[in-house]
Length: 354
Image (cartoon, rainbow, N blue to C red; front, top):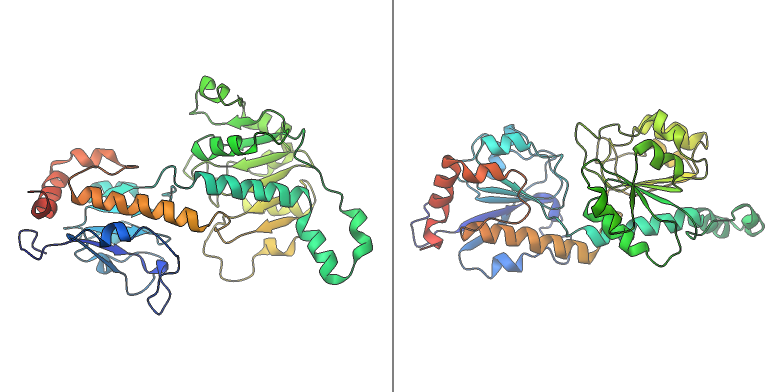
């Protein structure tokens, strides 16, 4: 790539899982028009989907927009022209952040773009579980009408929501539930100031207190060394037998063995699980044996609006970088000050910023 030539382009590559095998996009709108209408941008895609991005796939790309594949140290073996990875979403546990920084590559995410969709999906599951939607659907399909008296549900009125990880998604969830007559929400998050929670009518408590008092426990924290197996057998044992657990965050935050046993033994009433250890799940999962759980393939929040909002933010980040601007949502801001990154940034974008 020669940025000084008249044909120089800022080359963005999209991972293969955005596309069907025939090359058509799987999603109606991921913001690509932002890049395609800029004369200095070139957008291509990986020819194949791999669970881990290969350095050969990156090649001379200046930016990569990543949906599901992992990004490892091996992925970044030859990042001479690579400026940035745009992670399509807010989680980045599948990306080796330290390796990005060492390779002088910016990693950015799309904070705020997922808030509404995840919050709505959580409310959807709260209602579906507490009203036994799955069981009642099965009764009609099987012609077992008279069994309906066994499935009296409960309203959200006068119930307590406990939120593990009170960031933007948790806050959006609280706002969305206003007016449904629930008790004041509880939250566990050691990084949130009590006054910030109080302004939203939320009480910060310990994890044990939250688990013991909540009718719905909803997980919205990142997966990292602090949160891995945060909720295990002991913690599940603190929950009410009538309570529901909802995980729309990441697999591994809740110990799957402990959760399976708690659901199988009816130690808790049920769960909604969107995230699993060892994704993707390509054969029947053991949770599918249980009738008190709702499952989704890490897609319960996927909507047209979600992909449009994330896509526009992700593509805008690449456009900003190509014009010498810092994108929103940078995970490793220290890389921006490194002389080697600064030199690469000037070299790659020099032709577009004269």
